[in-house]
Image (cartoon, rainbow, N blue to C red; front, side):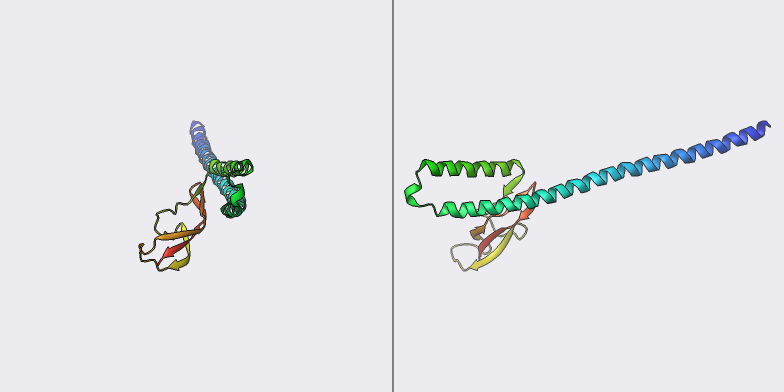
Length: 154
């Protein structure tokens, strides 16, 4: 009878170990699932934010175009300073959200961050040098959301 009890104990211990291992695997799988799901949600939120930021950037583009054509008679007006303050607040908001303008001044063309829209033969510069920015480019948390559209030297 004692031998039977020992066999039963061993059988129950083996069963216990099997259940414990199964529970540990299930727990590990669940924790991995939670991490993966959190990453998916984060990526989805970043994708959504990039879309929203892109819409705001179109407003900034038009704002910049309008400011380039400010009539001379209002360049020193208080009204224009107020408009510039609003523009700065909007740009500060985007900066706080992780939006950065892609550098183009003095840069060579980089296909990762720039899109060449035009080429021009300019003997005074190097090949691939950015001559003019046609549309600013931006990153959001170091991820490209819009390349800078540029004119480059042939």
